[in-house]
Length: 226
Image (cartoon, rainbow, N blue to C red; front, side, top):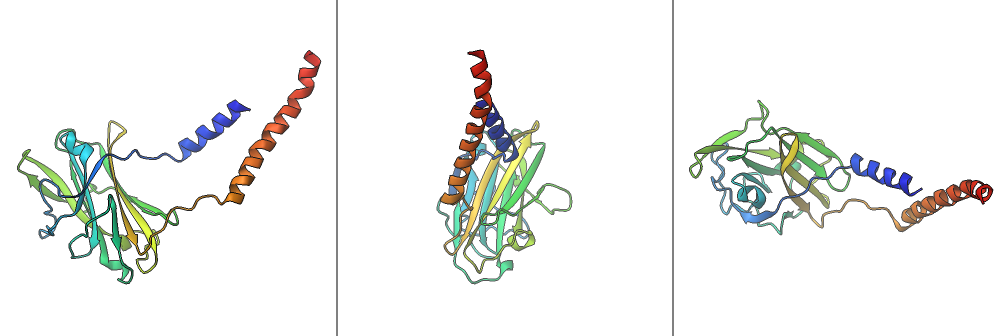
């Protein structure tokens, strides 16, 4: 029974992998600044910077803001906004500078935390209009750009209480290299749904029933051996 349960738990874990988050520094700035497009280097920068990557000579950065406006100061990795503006008025900026280690690929994933809807895209793919910015410290380039939340099919609605996350990750040698997540909270926000007490009770009852049935099936065999 224990073996079967362990296999079941392992299967669930494999079906729902989670990226380990790097250490992050909120309300900071990318070392080469924001230079994408026409130089949208809003000040203060109020950027979430991947401290783990920076410590290894690389850089990942995210910030969330009202389109065309300075990003608000975040609380940790959470940017808070009042309700009311149209859906096309919110953007996030991303910065990717793999100066020392490079990467095989990059991925940006947007998630509606309340519903679980997700949308992912490769920010470095041709046609995604990423802008190269020169880094005087290393003589290397980083890639930057902006993306609007309403471009992603995740049910984005800034007029209702809700929370939406943006994850920027890179891979090297087939393994996750860096991972950074910023969250936009509108109004009081929302959290992912968790099982209600009655649901937990049913789950526990189900596991108990499986164990009881297994013991009953084994009982005759044990009696014969005795």
